[in-house]
Length: 453
Image (spheres, rainbow, N blue to C red):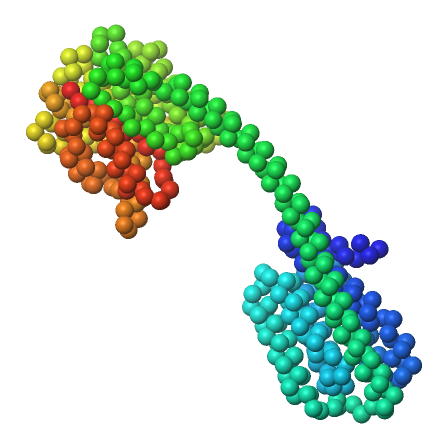
């Protein structure tokens, strides 16, 4: 029965902190009932009708508080318990003076409000202010004054002993209050520790799965020695935001000695981005190997068809795909064919002039108004450098004002380093973005590739 009353109004879906506050409110109500009810016959015997009335009010208030908790009216229950007790304590102190020590219960009211009304700051502060104000008012106003009710010497002695009893009650309330709080806190800590163990185990399982996904993604990405074999003076700076990435780079050497090379950004990052990147990589491979395409624009058109067919299932509305910068470098390294989806190509010639080739403003994937991708043809000379990249580098926040790096700043930086060896360029690009980022979080995957003719 007692356990049922303590847990009255508690639901399993409640947060642990609310459960503890409800249980504490019920405990205070039960404690007040236990203290008040046995004394009522004594008050009747001495004809202390006002205290009898007050005690009956306490019984009613406590029963109402428990009832409100059972009906899920928790804040109303908390407020009813605290404000009603404050009013009754003021009435008792004014009627019988300080000898009953009722005014000290205001301190207990403050402790109760501090815990029960944790999430209701305004109400909590108002309640504590009223309780402390009542305490100090009674303490100083009634310090040398009798109560408003004139009592006989016998009743005065009873009230004096009753005051001692209230001292004891306050002492016991404080002990039980804090003991209950400590016990509930210990139970909560035990439950929290168990949940932490479960979360750590699940987190380890998830991280292990993602780590294995990285192992698979690394196997899909071309090895750097493959890139170096076919593009001797080149670099790839690849920095995922998470363990796995939506960004990827891709290379496909052609039978005639030419090379297809790309830097791509699949929708999303992390595990979802990595899954989309696998679909996009497979679509590029199919477009080149199965459909024998070598023109970048035609490859992107066919890749879009494959991706759209892959994601277009009944009842789904998947708009995922990729942004990409895709080039075809001729066998003699003198002609560059290029097509892009949202991501441009930058070419710096051997005189330091930078040219931007703009991409089609559409992704490789499902879109409302798909247009054919345009293939741009450029003539190259020895010493020219061109760069393929995703948007992660330019979009990184950092610097003194925590702003985006932006493409303008990136162009200026590339113009300052383009004459340096390609591997050194990669190191400088990596160092530059780390310096810019500082202590801020990386906002997106980064894939940045450069080739010198």
